[in-house]
Image 1: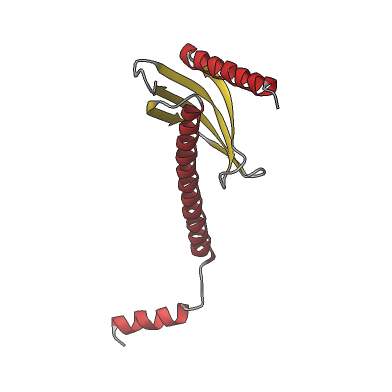
Image 2: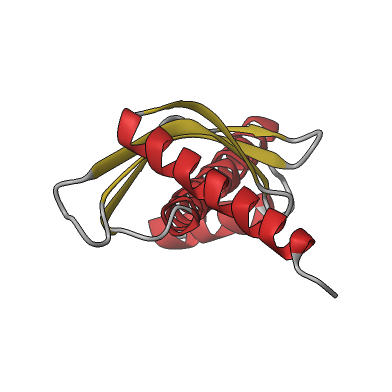
Length: 150
């Protein structure tokens, strides 16, 4: 018997015989790869959701330009299927570019994009001022609507 045929015979005998250590290593590698893919998917969601939330925050105070959204290390709660994403949002004014606005907080959102909540941790004076002005104008409009004769 030649050497290649001996190897072929040994290979045929080993078919169906699986080394448990090799199987365990293969299973662990598959789990690691699946976990890495899941991490990448969640990172992509964190980037997308924080960007969308940043846009909504800017739009909520009348718009702006030069939006920059940075997110910190996010966490995932498998019990609630929610991502918690620390965010830092900054942008310039819509009309006066030298007006800078900045707000930081925590975005909590389900992995499917529903039930989003933003808890502001801090904001600069410009952001707080424009937010107060917007709130005041909303109160005036509501009051005006209530006082109109029907």
